[in-house]
Image (tube, rainbow over all chains, first blue to last red; front, side):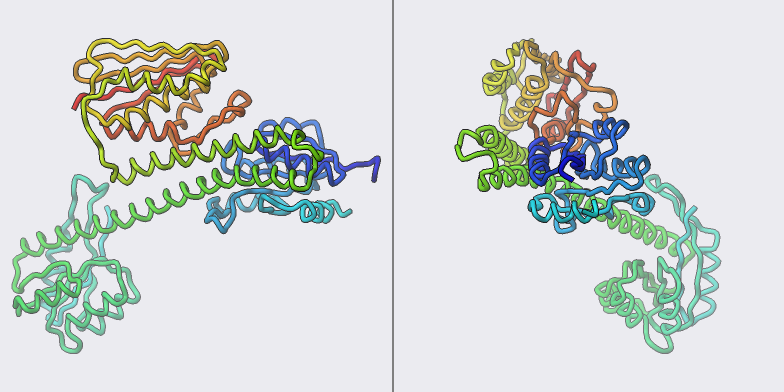
Length: 131
Length: 373
């Protein structure tokens, strides 16, 4: 695995958070590419197939992560996707804002609350990559 | 045409058929309603029968006789209140005593009609009941919608507040774990970024306070004649450190009488928002021109920049809460996304208007018109 490092795409419009996630995931021993918007991520996905993707939910639109997820899965059906968001049920924001029609195509494999610890993230990534 | 279901509860068949005849081909319309109402009559001989109907069929209006063979009208009314049915009750009785009228209205009857009544009396009363019901339902609907808007605002707000907390927390953890080395200098950039995020949060909170003041309407306004040029000058001064950094040149021109009866704090908020935007979203070596013009019945304020501009699509969104135009050109620029929303609300408090003209990469002009009085 050492010379076959898995590639992880991280997309977040918060530059600070993106930098931190990038550092964290690199320290876990993965290769990382980053994008700061849904549009930028779509461009990357046109030419690159990552082994796993971590998307922020609210970017250009408040459901950018969902749309990105949908598009990524259409192109790479087996790509595991983690949706990370600062929005939670606890703050009152839930995915109910989106209608059932949308729900049926939201295809993230895992929802994660932002502020996750490195060891938790490592475990979840390994699980999704079946390592 | 919408239909209201009217339940007539009376043990006298003559009254029931009479009401049926009078309301059968009657319609009610108002200027402010989208459609007219007509009436579908349902009949009940007793209070017990009425309750059964209320539990199984949609009913909007109940015409209720008090004197019934079994349970009386007041008891039916109590039941309706206990079940919180969304309907209006009108009591009909031949014993139109003041005592009963008070008891019935206390129990939530909307109105009262003595028997015998003329067709005209019935129609007039029904017209009032319909109007009352319509307004009551409209109000409820608007309250629900208001709550939803509030909810949406709070969910975006919590997102906006949590993002910097996450970022700062992340940097602190990196420092705690000494991920980038042992010396404090190794973390200089992270410390700068954390401070910048804290500043952003502080600005967001200040903006929120402005917004709350507008929305609660509770802030005491001190209205006096304010010279808007001096307000603009103060706003320009506060932006100066930043404009020097970007080498953006600000100019102010005033024409005629630029005094306006207004609240100084509110005028300051308007100018601060417009001028800080004009500098923030400008190009290096750009210009900001502020023009305050006397138009006799109103004052015009124009703030023109030579900045990054906006697309048509962006222009439609910019006055919303927490709206920030996200692009490569704006990503380094801090903002709460509330400034223009606040400015617009402020301008509207003065019955003024705010317009914007913009061309991508050329610049943007905001035009505010504030009427005198």
